[in-house]
Length: 228
Length: 228
DNA sequence: GATTATTATTAGCTAAACCTAAATTTATGT
DNA sequence: ACATAAATTTAGGTTTAGCTAATAATAATC
Image (cartoon, rainbow over all chains, first blue to last red; front, side, top):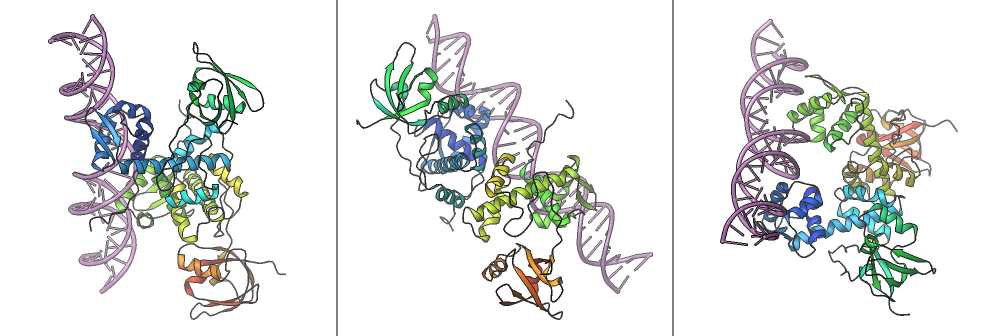
């Protein structure tokens, strides 16, 4: 019965590859080494797997040229991202996890939960549109809101901006920002941008000013706020 | 550095074997075919795995004689049982799962969650002592309350008994009992025990009487209630 | 107590995902 | 353009957990 096959669960490492390509390349393509580095797996293993993923119709792959996601591959990747972000939201909101602990747990759980679980969890959480970092949560139908936010470092002086998300690359960075209330949703006014050293000075809603250096201005993303 | 090794996570199938032996044998021993049947795995695979589990010090195993859990094996099995039952409680209590759906999801999740997750979940649930079936939840330290309940079919006439648990072997059975309010915690008076066909007639707190046949009297477990 | 049946074990294979080392292809620098 | 560096692939090997088919041990039956 051709065409009858239902989407059977993909092995957990396959999903990791898809997510990696999605994260690295978005709609473009990712190289073997990039994927290798992202997943901490030997390049040779990646070559192998990319071949298999192509057979499965999940990626487009050309030798020596890298891989990009097909429609189905992207769908699958976004399904995992949705799970991941909903699970993180749950761990932080209901189980009292801290930023530090959340990621690994979510990484393991996202491969074990069913769609059923995911949707019931979404319900319990009130169908949030963003996770605690401020990253958008893909919808159940695979749609992902376009992201028009930009790094704080690239915003113009004098603008009123709202923190849209905080990248989760480094734990210390998250903690530093968290302590100062520089979390998604916060409204800021950009007071100064020093192009020599990249330091950005901002004033928050309470009138406090903060000077944020290099890495921080790349971790904090903002959106222009309608003048008011 | 001998003796320094910490308990690294066991692969998920290892846990399944330990749980199977625990469920089948309790403190006694389980045969190759029993385990094979319980896990839906070929007997030869079981023989193999039992050998490996012995090497790891998790079971005691004698060729042609079956396997029993060592202290460490039992500890590990109970850790999984604790996870399983807490997760089931959560799925039923917070995510609105039905009896039918709960088991498989819990089976997958119990291998993915950390101890950290488990304990935080226990906290969220208010450290329940029993799962929704009435089965005792092993404590975090590996202790399991001794179970002195007995099948309804073996209880004496005239006794006041309380349903302690309902075995989860068959979904239809669970549904049938659930509809009639025959769930853990319910108080019953045993009105008649017909030894010819094994039918037991009970009266519940509301004065309703129920005639329960063969399989049902084995699925419902009760404890004698202090005379009142 | 010998024969048959049941239960277990051994031997030999498979598939996924990984690895290392060697060979090859693409990219870079002068 | 040509040599060298960097990235990628190929070849061959490992581990885990399963499988089948053939053999051996234990148990049951007459």
